[in-house]
Length: 156
Image (cartoon, rainbow, N blue to C red; front, side, top):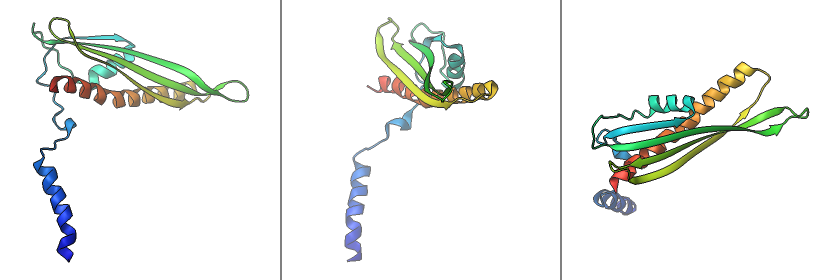
């Protein structure tokens, strides 16, 4: 009787292994993709983060792909205190991506967005540090999605 309860589990494991299931993110490797040109436009702080975290390599070959990345950031006041001063701001980061082949034909394009609500205090330096940290956090959430989108374009 004890073994009869384990048979469905064993059957499920055999079925999962034998069907060829493989996670999509397992082979996230962009080293085989050659970029002849990588264009960055927009907010310089976000461009710096992208260059240091995405690790995209540019090869000076004539047969590579072209990657255009555009960065923008916006802040808006989301709530005010009783005196009318902002106490919360919404930070939004937008990154646009266009991947083209050697003939400038678009392979894929996508737009990525992330946002965070930031508490505003009376200390400008603390607010600036918090803003920088949240910008980094948002970017670190978006960058894997960009890499996944590029990788997915070449799996099709």
